[in-house]
Image (tube, rainbow, N blue to C red; front, top):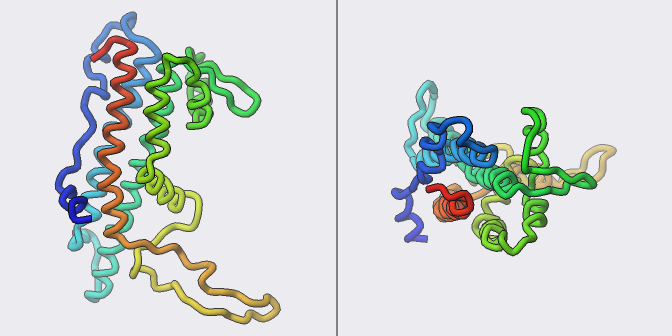
Length: 252
């Protein structure tokens, strides 16, 4: 883990070319739906990733500032620093994980896929209105994108998203995201004061194990190290997808 800790001063950003500054200077007739979505989602990706980097970096600060807090004791100050760091880290995890959703949206339109969602098939070569666009992006997921990439010309992009989806470190990050969003929220070890243990006999309700309702607890330094380890993998994923699409459309 020592070499991972050395990486804590080196959080690289995404390449600015995904923002598409030169593209948006073009005349209307020189643009396309596919590249419009690439660069608009690229813009979202760039700044979301940058903010995730800031949050991750700040989560490492054991003496993080507590502006606006008036705390009566050192123990409460310590607890609040833990709380702020924990939430900075959670925010970074959610933002890093959202990269995959943005990328799948980009791919669906860039390759003009026909995606099957339950019994319906949606054509991503065009959109009819804003509502149509918003409806279609809700239907995009890894399974239907991967299933639609059947032609031999799609082998490279299919391999890129498959390898990212099945990367063990990325999967660990995804699991943490699911804990935050869908299951019980996670706490950092040593933060919660409400965790308790033991079997309790409740009147008219049988046996209750206090452990059942405790939040999952994690070691903050271990999760930070995981994020630092995954961050360059995410950066490479975005770069690989962008380069594949750029080659397809003949752009820089």
